[in-house]
Structures are given as structure tokens and as C-alpha cells.
Amino acid sequence: MDQAPAPQPAERCTAAHIEDPTPCHGPHDAVTVLDGAGNVVTGCEHHGARMLASTDGACIEPGSVVGAASRAYAASQTIRPADTNA
Image 1 (tube, rainbow, N blue to C red):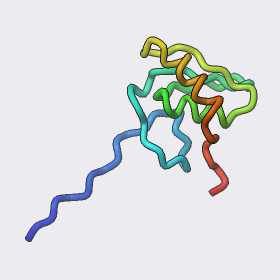
Image 2 (image 1 turned 180 degrees about the vertical axis):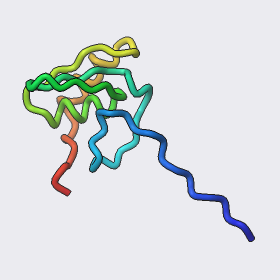
Image 3 (image 1 turned 45 degrees about the vertical axis):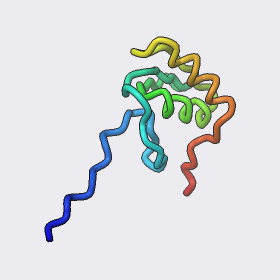
């Protein structure tokens, strides 16, 4: 009997760290994260929050989703940073 192919992961937002296994939540341009060195990435609300929690001196700005930057900022205060040492 033929088996259906395994589902492939959807393309991830640019704020998702390669070692962060969590899936994106929402549009990939929901927020914009800026670090202290002038780097800018757009991302989903979830990975924007993870990046903000993981990057010293970062800030977050609105993207395509109204209220996402505020929610991501609040979430970044309570979530674990992305584990990049795994």
C-alpha cells in the first residue's frame, strides 16, 4: 500500500532562529525586530517575541498585524529565550 508523503514544514519567518523548533504563528511580517547593531528582521508574532527575549538591546516595532508588536513585547517578558546552545 502506498503511503502519503510526510508533510513538509511551512516556510518559516526570518525571525525564527534555525535551532528554534517552534512553528510560526501568524503572518511572517506581523512584527519588525531591530537589534542594537542595526540589523532588522520581520517575523511572526511568536518568533518576534522569542527574538526580542533572546537579543540584548533589541526593540520591536509594528508590522502587518495591528497590536502584534505590543503582544510580542509582553510575551517576550515572560517566555524563555530561544535555546541556541542545543
